[in-house]
Amino acid sequence: MSTAPLPRTEVVGSLITALPFEKQTDMIVGWAVRRASKVACVANVHMLMEAHWNPAFRTILNHADLVTPDGMPLVWMMRLMGRFNQDRVAGMELFLSLCEQASERGIGVCLVGSTPDVLKAMCDRLQNDFPTLNVVSTEPLPFRELTEEEDRQLVEHINGSEAGIVFVALGCPKQEYWMTAHRDSIKAAMVGIGGVFPVYAGLQKWAPRWCRYAGLEWLYRLIQEPKRLWKRYASTIPLFILLSLYQLFAKNDLSRRILWRRGM
Image 1 (tube, rainbow, N blue to C red):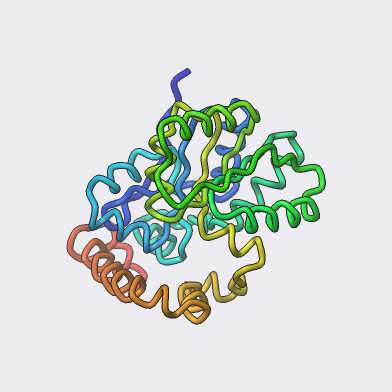
Image 2: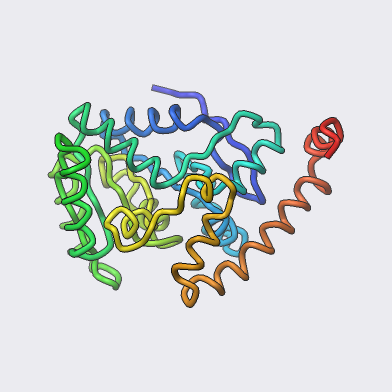
């Protein structure tokens, strides 16, 4: 069965799916019901800068089945590029919505990555938040490459669990490479949401709503983990701003016309 390609908008060289939150979640649920092998990436500034520096990773991102705009800077860019009604499709909200729909529709979910302690904490909270959700498998992967035999057994275990949605937490860009490598072999919709696991498990705090939608979630996370994140943000945020300005004012006539008409 042939389907029309999903609408996409280029943001600093990467293609982001231009659909509302509800339609993107419905798309993943539809794949899960059919146990279609699909790749969904949750994109933020860091991911787009990884794609800018690494053409191979950019190819992976641009060939994903779905790339959601997680960060507000991506949403703002998409609106300036003509997608005026685009909303945010962020990792945590996506995870919660998919778990709710999976519990209602009897779709099994699998958690891949992180540590046994984090996965246990997540399962405990999921049981409380979504009592009818069926977590059919948890797979805490080692901090090394799996052998071919280990990988084969992992694929068999996930497929044997009949999971419809596989949440993957290996960090960017490792989780995107992993999902792409297992497209067609894992019969489920794979969703890369690495940063969600420790927050949902209670190891990190979720930024307040006003902070998330003001585009300041990066600052909230930086305050929590300054040693780990300051170099990442220093190398990605200024470059993203420069590339965005170049795209808006040097490359795109539509954006210039929109900004002129709005008096910006």
